[in-house]
Every structure is written in structure tokens, then in C-alpha cells.
Image (cartoon, rainbow, N blue to C red; front, side):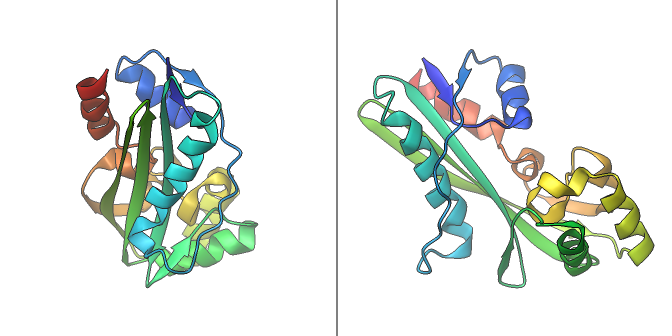
Length: 183
């Protein structure tokens, strides 16, 4: 059985589009990041934790864990705590290029594989009114970095360099290639 250790509707949708039959079992892994883990490696560390959380109870199955972070100016931007935090993040991203790193872990009997896919995203210069209008949609509140490129946040993005689906939180083409090699 193939298990996606996630409750993300976006990740499920991408797995379905890629033609996989799978079950979703959300991980309850506590996301604590040790200080020694470099920023680009944080999502690999977290995705392994999520995958292992499910794999320990399903050792005969293939489990996929994934985690995405947004990084700018040496700091990680998680999901905003409130609208003020979302405003702070979007103001920080305005007119800059930032990195989105998505880690993926694939665990199966006798095999462990993980990787990080990184994409650069450049934002337009945003006015305070544009930021407030976007926050008013509610979309930023459950997204790392306070934006969703696949939704209304698409108008914030000037350019991307890398895999679009990494920004969505699931580099599905690379995942599909790796799964097809093992399934």
C-alpha cells in the first residue's frame, strides 16, 4: 500500500493527477528543528520525521512524507500566527527573491530515500493596500510564507526559477519518477 503522510488537499490532488492509488494518514510528528540543521535541509529533516511517524505503524508499506519552508534573508517563514504576522511576512517578501524548499521522504521495507527540491520565487513590489487586500481573502493564513501561488497569491509572483510544484509543497514529477522506480 502507498501512504501519503499528509492531510494536505494539494498533495492529495497532485498524487491523484499523477495516477497513484494511495491512502492519506496524517502525521502527528512534532516539528522541532534542531539548531544544527541548515535551512535548506530543514524540510528533509521534517519530512523524514513525518514519514517515520507513519512508517513505524505501517512497516510493510511505502510511506511518503513532505514538508515545505519559505526562506528569505536567512530566516524561515512558517505559517502566519495571525493577520499581523502575515502582513509582516508579505512585507518582508515584497520586491525580493526568496527560496522555497520542499523536502520529501519515501520509506519502504529496506529502503529510505529523501531529497530536497528548491525553487527561487521573486515577488513584485507590493503596496500595503495590496498586502492587506490579499490577507483579507484569508488565503495566506494556512500557508508557509503567507501566500499560495496556486490561488489568489499568483498575482504576487513576478518570476520563478525551478519547479512550480515545489512552491505548492509537492514536487510531483520527481516524486513520481522515484516512486515508479521502486513500485
